[in-house]
Image (cartoon, rainbow, N blue to C red; front, top):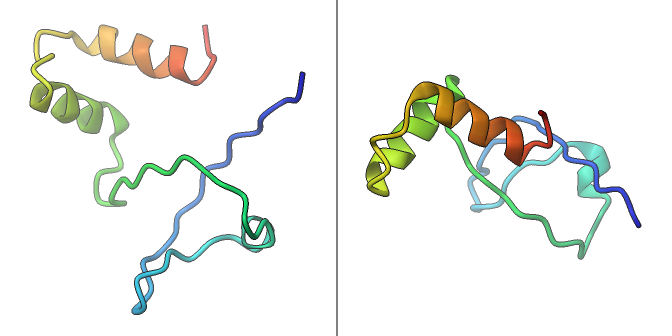
Length: 77
């Protein structure tokens, strides 16, 4: 089974609408990625997840619930 490596980086939307990528990612022309855009100003992932959950009607989740979801999604137990 092939191991998938997740990378995190800060990109910028360029004037032509494209997203800037690190050099190693930019070399992977044609490869498809799952992309989530989180504004840098929203540095607190927990508050982002909380607002997303609230928007989806899951506002009864506790901070511990949200933390567990984030960790499980990243393979951290």
